[in-house]
Amino acid sequence: MGDVVGVAVLGAGHMGADHIRRLDRVVSGARVAAVADPDAERAKAAVAGIGAVSVHTETAAALDAPGVDAVLVASPGPAHEEALLAAFARGLPVLCEKPMVPDSAGALRVVEAEARLGRRLAQVGFMRRYDAEYRDLKALLDSGRLGRPLMLHCVHRNVSSPPGFTSAMLVDSSVSHEIDAARWLLGQELTAVTVLRPRPSAGAPDGLLDPQFVLLETAAGALVDVEVFVNCGFGYQVRCEAVCEAGSARIGEEHTMLVTADGGAREEVPRDYLVRFADAYDQEVRAWVDAVRRGRATGPTAWDGYAASVAAEAGVRAQETGTRTAVEMAPRPALYDAAEDPVGP
Image 1 (cartoon, rainbow, N blue to C red):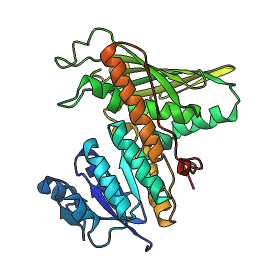
Image 2: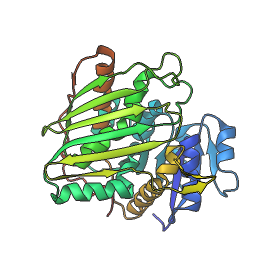
Image 3: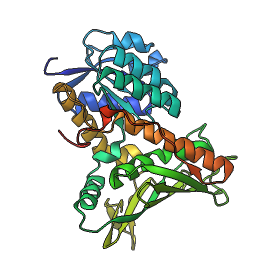
Image 4: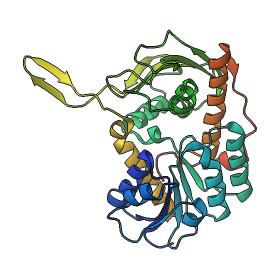
């Protein structure tokens, strides 16, 4: 592979277009070599002004395009399994946005396919692992200075939900970030999920059960609660407080611009995840490109993607039944026993 990694980006929607911009303008050592999207005009618009990029409507055509060394999957979740398996078949490293595969059976097929290769090719896009505040909290918990973690209190709020957003997606799309963050921060697998619901907010679309309260249990006896509210109306907020035996630590307080005028003060609140986690996305893609150039794989693994899908499925069942639901995972392949550090070489 040359000094510059040629990347095929699959999906040119909101997330894919942002990654195309990032690869072209922010991350060194990479270039956009090909883009695939069922909407050819959208794909062309996403790469306007970028030279030497081939545009396709089919995944296979983009993966086989000249100059492609790696793949960034930003298409809708149901298309991820096919894209990952196609990349594996070509020996191409992949950065796949979450969910890796929405259903756990498909996610397990991806894990098994990579295990048969005998080497890691996939990194899953749980970008919070690259956020400076989350990394500081992880380092603090790992140091043991606060003693054993007992609880995580989490908040996940969005201004509004997009069209077609379902009650199940509050868990399997939104809370999937907290699911991965909890596993990573605590170093523990999740064992059960309970979902409670207040009456829906007046700001929620008809039929959407928003907000929700998700309780996760871990193998070592810690508890993780998540308030997820995707139509709060006032901003994008993500917070996490770790409560330990000898102290607590909280991240996610808005350290943004404070505007004082007209006899009052107003603190600006980010409007979406691309603003709040802009640096985390940059660091994530930069780390992935650097790893690809060295022939290595770092970051969240396909197993992490599978674990998140299993827990999210259990959460949706808990939501539907109103009962505590066990998280039951397949045995972990040995390939993932020595996964590299998630935030660096």
